[in-house]
Image 1 (tube, rainbow, N blue to C red):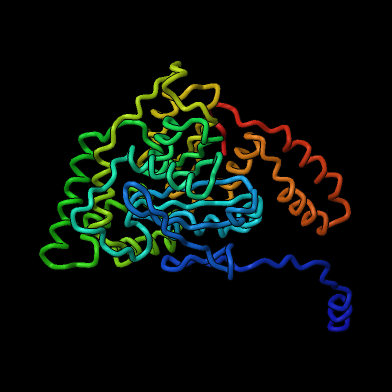
Image 2 (image 1 turned 30 degrees about the vertical axis):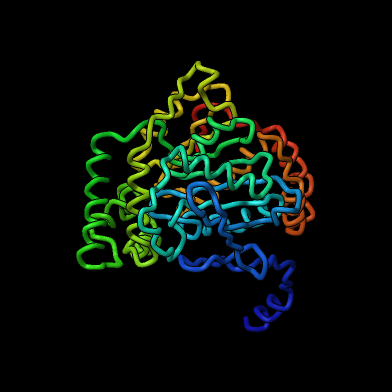
Length: 376
């Protein structure tokens, strides 16, 4: 028996090792694709104060197409997008794009307090800041990737400057002004954050704010969810990486947002680019996404729901990536470098897979995202 086992082991040959960089994730350090293995940050001056921009993918002067991202409440590039961009397939795709990750004023990691007397920009003014960032980097057009409040800001920009936006990939967007329930909850959060800072000099969030941010991003948490991920964000939302005053000002600006004013059938006052509205089935914002999709023109809008998650970029990165890849492909980006390397990786697995890879790639070139809904 031992001789048979030794003979069997001697016949085993390691055919292929597909090496890749480990996923680097830190809430306090920007790690990933960039010079020296890190994302590069830069402060850009605007008419409404400086904004911090993280560059990823290819350098801005590389001639590659642009992707612009904008984060949600209580998050920034590190906590909203870094994990997704370090997802193995996304890292490969980023070699075909230049990515600019825009922070709302004072929302980057360990941001210093905004100056006394600083008037926080309105949502429309935050959208104008996006235009100033585009001019700074010489962006002619871009694909937008926004989450929550960031999705609302990029939508406003798309309405203001339709010639600049090739497409919008919006996660948990809202098109309406704040409801009375949201207004009450947010006003209480702003009060507790301001009172705690002034009276105690606290550097952590009040418990009510922590609970609200967890609900805002994850929805209702069940035993089937990724509890390690949930606990990581629960610790993150204690506020030690945030400037409480800065965040309270951003929340107040989002709370005072105006309605986007879009109506289905109104070609003039609507988004003219291709739009994909995506939500997680466990998110508290599903109804908001359905409402917004119902107001978009059906010829250029798609609604998608991913099951079993609320924070889709973290809980289901592979499904979001596939939707994003097809979305880019629908905009006319062939992603030839990505597809070639992906097919090469499949080819190394077995000589019999070549024909199948060729069929898959041919079929992928014919995929078009269609309107409601896309099952995942």
